Length: 317
Image (cartoon, rainbow, N blue to C red; front, side, top):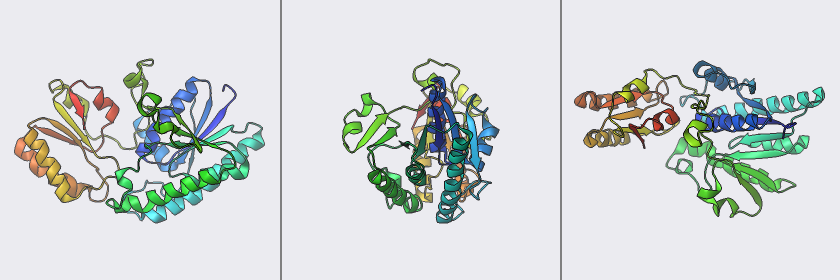
């Protein structure tokens, strides 16, 4: 493994960047060279919120959305642009390293990066798909979430088709572990599933590196110091609420969650999407209830889940 050089290709979403960076850290600790390839917008936002991981090589490319994608943008146009630009960037990067005489030994690519798998067959470079979800179809890929459903399900199907067309049995790295899903990881015989999780910072997992308390790639900057706010609360008293970076809750759902939090009579930290389409309306709806119970809750546009969960006064939900 010492002479290995892995090209890690990640989708520029928080739920993909975080495990990608954690996986990169583990590989680097083993003496493996790692190059992370993702969009320019993700790399730029990462550099604003965290220090770059030592020895990690970054290979950003422009996907045509250098200021970042928002829910106001057309999702289909974004994926077409991301795929076109990403395919060219990854191909050129692989060929450049080969011409230098220091080729990549493997390409590891995440879910939604189906085109990376196709490149591997053409260039004859071993590829390892990196899957971040469980084997069950997640609820956000169902028709009840039309925006995500529109692009995620077709890409998942395409991803499986690419794996099926491969000339050799494919290894698929899964963000899980044997003690949790031993039978599931071995249920599909035509793929070689390998559990490499949980991909979370060492300080929250095994404690081998107590300084590893952050994924290192926050794409959104926090607006207030929520840690100071948490420190003022009693142990195990705070409810932590987050529905992910791309969730789109209806006004009725927001109202139900807000009413439930208020009726709990517990302090809460609620992460809402700030600066994206509809976020301001969501936040104003919640604030109308928060004002009724002054000092009960805190709204934040971003809070790293790891830092929240390690606080003894915070319960994740």
